[in-house]
Each structure stands twice: as C-alpha cells, then as structure tokens.
Length: 392
Image 1: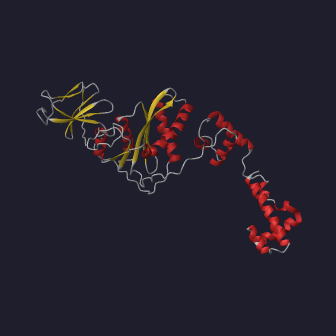
Image 2: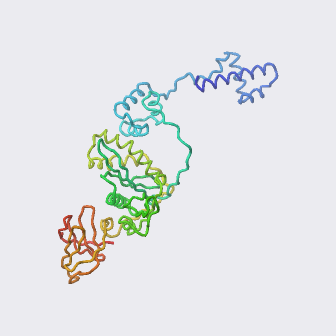
Image 3: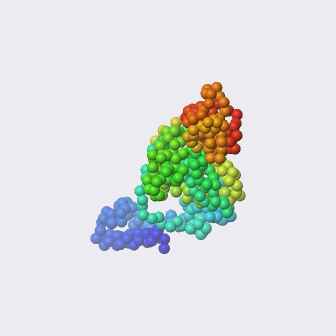
C-alpha cells in the first residue's frame, strides 16, 4: 500500500472514532474537530458526507484521478528509447542537458530521472556519505584560479592529459585542452589562454608538481626560495602562487575531472573523434561553452578582479629563461646549441656580458641584454631576421 493510501485509511479510522465520541456526547464538535486537526466547519462537512455516503464520501478523489499535466505514455517511451539508442551510459544529468539542448526537451529534470529509473534503464544513486562542510568559494571572479591536469583514456586506446584552468568563484573553465603529457609548456598555455581571454588574475592554486614548485623532501613543504620557471613567470606577472597539500584541497578540480571523465569520453565517442587536434576544437567550440553554461555558479560579488594585460610581449614571460655569460667569440652556449650574437650599433662586442636566454614553446630561442632583444634563433639555433621586441 502506498503511503498516501495508508494515511487516508488512518484519517478515516480517526474520523470514525471522533464521530462515535460525538454521537455519544463525550466530545463536542469543537473538541472532535481539534482532535482531527481540522476546523469546526470542516468536521461538520465530513459528518454530512459520512451520513449521506458512508466512508466513500470521505475518500480524497485526487488519489484516483490522473493529473492533467501527466506526460503521455508514448512520450515516456520515446524518452527511454532515445536514451537506450544514443545516450546509454550517460548520467541522468548529462543526458538531461543533451535532451534539452539537442532535442528540445521541455520536461523537468525530475520527470526525466523518474521516468528512466522507473523503466530500469538508469539505476538509483547510492545514498551519500556523511555530511561534510565544503570550503567557501572566493567572492570575486579572478581572485583565485585553479589549474590541474588529468591523465585518462579520453578516447579508445589513447591516454591523453586534460589541462583545465578554472575560476574558484564561479567554476567557469577559462582554458581547457588536451596534451600528451602535463608539464611546463601546458601550464604556460593555460595561463596564456586566461590572460588573453580575461586578463591578469590575482592568485593561482596548484598541486606540487615539479614544474610548479621545488619540493626538497617528497611529500613535504615547497621551497618558495627556489622558484621554478613557472613560479618565476608568475612572479613577473604579479600572480601569487598557492600550493595544495592534499587531494581534498583540490576538491573543485577533482570533482570537475570526475564530471569530464564521465561526460567528455562519451561525447567524443558519440562524435567519432579520435584525433587530439579535433578533440581540442570540440572542447573549445562546443564542450567548454556548454559545460560553463550548465555548471557555472553566480559569484558572491558581481565585480571581478581581472586586469587587462598591457605589459610587454607575453611570450617573453611565459617561456623558459636562463642566465648565460657571452664567450670570447660573442657566442652563447645552451646545451648542444651555439648561438652567435650578431653585430649591432650599441656595443662593439658582448664578451663576458651577462645575457638572458629565452626558450619558447615552439623550440625557438632569443637572447636579451636587459630589456633589449639582441637576436632570435630558430629551433636549430640558426639566426633569424631581427624583430623589435622587449621583455619584462
């Protein structure tokens, strides 16, 4: 017996008891009504129905009538068939976003969930564990960003790493792309995407991977006095770096990756995408905008803390930088490369001068003396035609 039917049976039994007591004059109508939790007038109406129709007059007719808003059976069957044929394995929430976006679905999420669960195509989620208090989000967008990578089998038989850079205040993903392996260049790429799209932000929260931090003792605290190339670049940009010391501290990224691993793998398979370049195009044009629209939350404060980038060439900050001393032949040696500094009108030579060598993501090089670029080289160390450039 359903709960509503059980409650109705109990209600009628209590009415019969109250009615008998009233008939025996042991209770007044006011006292009987109070016992049933209804008004005097309602109790008198129930007396009239009971004496005229018996217990049937007290039945709540809403329990036996179909709601005029109830979805037709064929609509429910079409929904189940759509899920089985095209979206089987999707979570209900993931399927519901596609049901609305691609199929013009107008029913509620609850109806979709209950319909799929009633037909047995989706299992009910297990009961959640103990309540935990989550960390309060940053109040302003641009106040703190997260960056992390997840290595996973995003497409069949291929292990890629997904790099995301997201806002703590809203959960919005500003940058999202696949790379073969996480490292310095992928982290630089994520930061550059954010700056070009939104501007400079205040702080960055990361794990303690080697390209972010130098950690003298495994599992211990980071050494902020020995900055990595990435930390040096963030300092130049005025972005504070914050290390995370536990997986729980990176909970927002971990939960986001759990969603991506469930949704993105299915969407890439559904679209037949197996190439990394195509996958990155799908991320940028379709998946990331749809994800942000569905999952972003409203920040506590409407104002944001992003600042437009108006400094020097960004690529000369988001790169590797090394200090070198020029040899007697006006050459700089870096690993297997010997880079010749050409003549210029500012100095007769650069022998014994301290210069700064930049290596860029595409493998090319540049040599700087202070803020002035002396020369640019291709990935093979060959001198390129000089272009005017400054570096911060």
